[in-house]
Amino acid sequence: MKKIPQRTCIGCNQKKEKKELIRIVKNKQGQISIDKTGKMPGRGAYICDDIECLEKAIKNKRIEREFEQKLDEEIYENLRGVIIDK
Figure 1 (cartoon, rainbow, N blue to C red):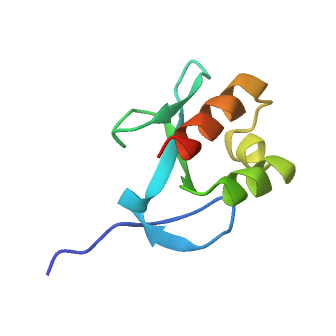
Figure 2 (figure 1 turned 90 degrees about the vertical axis):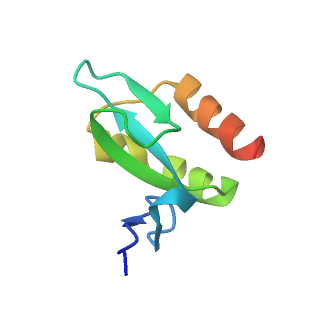
């Protein structure tokens, strides 16, 4: 039996299957983007495909703490777009 990778959502702090979550990645140049493939190089963080989890992570600055840098509002808007467009 193959083991299914589990990751923790930075919004609700629940463990879920990796394929159920959206990956946010920071590359070596410090650019943060949404990784739809799950294979981009860099430091990754995962969030549920749920607007409530995203808003909770933004309010508590969990994404900024995870990547140790201040984020532009544009990144949050892109994440909202990805979650709402599902």
